Amino acid sequence: MVQELQSVLGGKAVSLPQVFIKGKHIGGVDEIKQLHEVGELAKLLEGFPTQDPGIVCDSCGDARFVSCLNCNGSRKD
Image 1 (cartoon, rainbow, N blue to C red):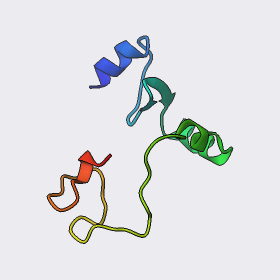
Image 2: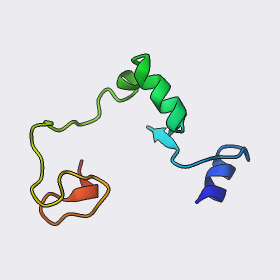
Image 3: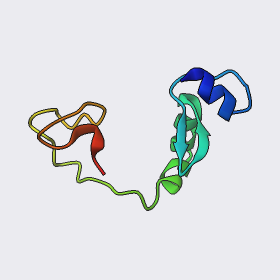
Image 4: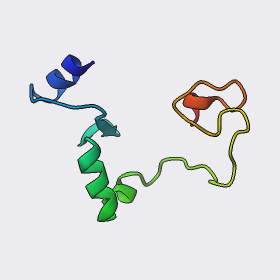
């Protein structure tokens, strides 16, 4: 996976995770944190579906990175 990312990003060294939004490379953890702190991350995410934060799955605790038969887990829209 790292080699594939390096080829997509022009051969530069990468650390995981790397974030892509609408097919555009945004960056790693540091870049995402900085974008959030200056309010730019919300702008990049405009139009994406959201979920009411008050609703939490009883089976998986709303962990989107795991498969859950109750709420669809990592396949959530």
